[in-house]
Amino acid sequence: MSPLRSELMSTGTRHGPPASPPPGAPSGAQRPWSRRGRREDEFGGEHHVYEPHRIGLPPLRPYLHTLLQRREFAYELSRTNLRAQHFNTAFGQFWLVINPLLLALIYFMLVDILQHGSRGADFFAHLMAGLFVFTMVNQAVTQGAKSVTSGGRLILNTAFPRMLLPLSSVLTAALRFLPTIVVYAVVHVATGLPIGWNLLWAPVLFVVLLVFTTGATSLIAAATVYFRDISSFLPYVMRIWLYATPVLYYIEDVPRRFHLVTDLNPLAPILGAWGDVLTRGEAPSAGRLAVAAAWSATVFVVGILFFISREREFAVRL
Image (cartoon, rainbow, N blue to C red):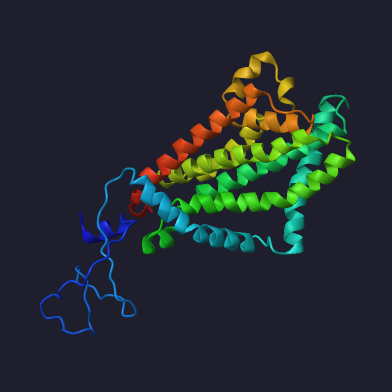
């Protein structure tokens, strides 16, 4: 393996005392040399040696420790993305809310026409709640799919856990979701939906949804490195996924012949329980909650492990 390929595939560093300079190199502290014959950083007293790694899972405990230490990197990257989307301006936050709100109004009119005017204001609140959280998942997955392929220079020139890239996309989508809570709260009260202790299930379900979103975003981000066309087909996949998810309808309204669609949809039990809590004011059933937690945990573990096991190869694939 060539030295360049070894350096590109590296994600870790090893520190040690300076090696002896190559023949003909000036002696003294003015021209320190690394083992590969390259100058050390003149402003630091240590040098880095990059070694090749095989594809596979690294030791998870040191990796997670490093990931936790670099969490500020994901936060700052998320802030940069939000600033580029004008999130810190009043108009940017207004558009952030008005866009899914207009979609909810359009879908409500469409569904209400198809149902011959049988849908009430409570269904509009259900539609808003579902669209807001699905928009968060959509933004996280769509932006996360490009997080690795668009960060080529960063990956080639900086040693850090690559897992921080999809995590920053999830964090960005979650921060964009927060202003919509205020809008939904107003509609929830205005439509007379129940307010009780069962609403405390909403934060629990949101955490379950975040776990699922993190796993799905990591899986798609790693797969896009190998199949670049995923980012082109993803908007169509997400639109079909929206129609197959109980957002435009209640999960109880799904005909029996289509139960297989909801059974194979990992978002269906999560958003089904989400609708039970917000629209009906009921605690989610134990079965639905268990299925939602199982889907989220499975997608999270598979997505995270697949991403980490492949990230050492990202540099040579970009």
